[in-house]
Length: 261
Ligand code: 1SD
Ligand code: ZN
Image 1 (cartoon, rainbow, N blue to C red):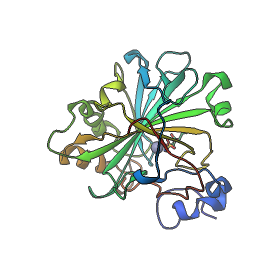
Image 2: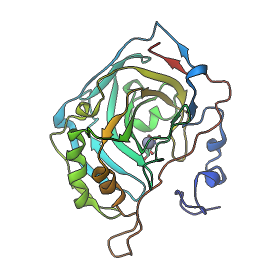
Image 3: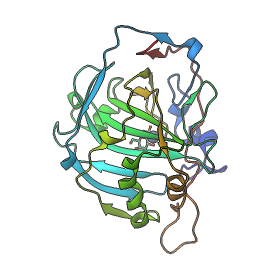
């Protein structure tokens, strides 16, 4: 078995199950969503986030993604509504992206792969702590936002991307304060929802996915910035951190619901 999981041929998604058997479970993520198989559910409520900009703490490169970490020691930045019961606390956000613009997202929509996918990870405080939440089917809620390369890039992505120069290599971390992640949401609140898993080992099946229908736009420069991160350490040769996405997993009878027609 591979010593450390990753996205290369010797330690990538095809081999994760050797060390993490849950990766072959019945409720794995991501999945491909086909609009013709989606069930519109008029009982699905709108979701709403109330985020405290003061909760943002740091930004880091862990060699597999770029992540912004938030203070989740109390109900400070929370997500409510939609398919959820109660308030879920924002813990971190991170991205998955490709080596070129025609792939990079984890979820695939009607055959379309976006250039990147942003995940906002929230956990259910009724389970005590994050580790406890990972063991529960209603433990975690992830909001997924697709990024596509376009002509009207979202200036709101700037803050994260300008910080990238400070976390070029694996293990680097920088302060990241006073940031309201809700500026990254697209205009439309329309979403798909289904029950699935983390897309990285150990792939626990504890996630209510809320995938936003409308992508946000980023510029080619912004994508280049993401691809300029290295998955190697400071004293090693540059090894571009790209293609940190897991491909779609079997749906196995799960139903994807849509908040919109
Ligand atoms: O890929 C992330 C991983 O980095 C970690 O943050 C994990 C939560 O501990 O979540 C996964 S994901 O399923 O949100 N992609
Ligand atoms: Zn993710």
